[in-house]
Length: 416
Image (cartoon, rainbow, N blue to C red; front, side, top):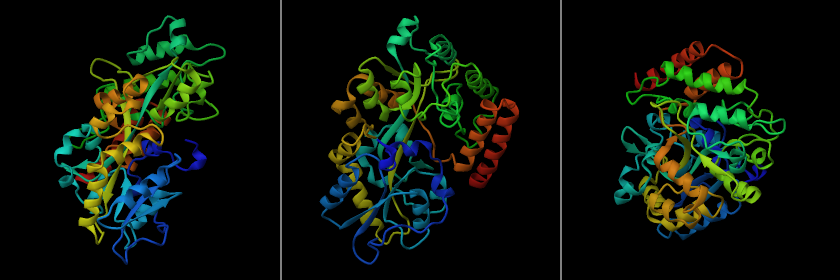
């Protein structure tokens, strides 16, 4: 999954409301099918070899309506944002669902496409494509994050895999030597990827079900303070040659534990054999839960399309009816989890070992990294607060209160 080959599928794990925040750039490509019968389908440029050829093959196999696939290198979010407000955008496109897409009437409900297959989709994954009880995207593939640990190093230190945040901090301390750090959470100390797990570990969330701030709670202060203590403990690896999404620091022995994702498993197995295990982010206290964040692109239909019915029929054919294409897309070009439970639990590559653990984590403990109502402005507000607390020693209560005020402003915009 070399980054130089284009965006790997894991790119959506860092996005929130990206389409709403994207600038207005011209959509790329000239053959958009607007003047003919073809359905125009857009993808971003995946990093894994063979994905483009695969999706073109699926489109060619659809014999009801011609389908033209447009592959979009570069800033996909900006291109798509521009296309959705113009007459030259796609009929079918992939994205993470943000509530602003629904509020702006840029996507149509696909709720009627699921039928009996609805029960086969992992509930939390389908919920990440749902607003006000309506499904607007059919999930295509799931990527997720988790904690990797070296079995031999923990055994040598007399440790069992940590089951709480305090045990994780203790393990990081006891595993740190003059050559190896105990834990790597990213070169920013975990600020960019751990906002959700920090809240979930304390029994909180970004937002409450009734659209209020979910982290205006003393437990959030406690949880964030734990990450600050880790940051200042000299047990975290900081300034690694590559960041958290690359397992190089772990495979090269720079750290005994690392936060990364499912996509890293093949490289870790190649380097370490079976000398590693995986864990969810552990709970902080009895009110909290273990958790793993996930992201999932969904196939959506442009509300401005002149071919809405034909586009919906194609999406149903590809992402609901054709489970063979779904399995091919998820498992033959890198390692990803199908959104369909029946595929995730029966695929040979996901039935054993750490891959099976990852499937179980998503199905039992998975939480959307960026739920639909969590907008880009909300994400930036919380991330900036975490950065000031963890990296600069800011007052946790004050900084989280500032973030909460910014989130409330967005909630008022969305829900009144």
